[in-house]
Length: 134
Ligand SMILES: [Zn+2]
Ligand SMILES: [Zn+2]
Image 1 (tube, rainbow, N blue to C red):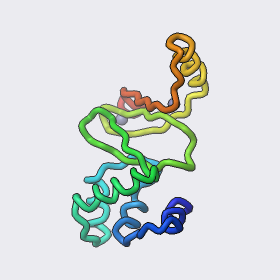
Image 2: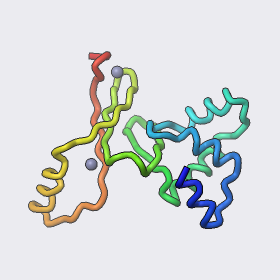
Image 3: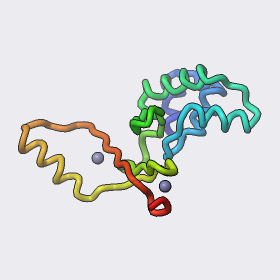
């Protein structure tokens, strides 16, 4: 992956451990516990603390980001190739879906008009029931 190569070029050591964690963080937000479980299934012994340290490393270099869904669990997803999107979170089954909002520009424009505030970053999560759970 480009991002990993970039870090290597900058002289950072990508340990096997970091690589394993990185490979499990994809577009879909995932928790440390889930990664821990998946690694165990792969026969990898990496403790939670190490997983969190890998997260910190990747967050520092903006390779991944932390997302807070207000359910007390921190999730992580890759930054980068994907288009700017938001999340739909099902309160019943926990399904997380991405959504790209076409009219978002109008909303940001409105904020700028009302408050003369130049937004350069935001995140929005929408909670409810997915199709299956309705
Ligand atoms: Zn947005
Ligand atoms: Zn659901």
